[in-house]
Image (cartoon, rainbow, N blue to C red; front, side, top):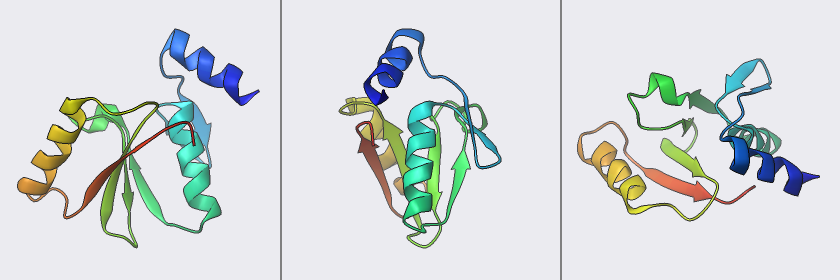
Length: 101
């Protein structure tokens, strides 16, 4: 079943998903949110539309870290964007999580 959901997003693009009282930009983000919740990790979610083109992000409150999720191995521009956030003080620590969680 999971494979079919991943395939659907590959074909159609991200599917906005409602999870735990919030709309997330994709099913992938919803799966990561569920994963973080199951570990008891508090987070804030920022949708791509609210992030000036930077993509959706999770701010892990206890870790003081920004996380960006991608379905596959990140492109070089993804890491360049994260390096910019750290350099300009928008983030103290940031990472890219990739895979289907």
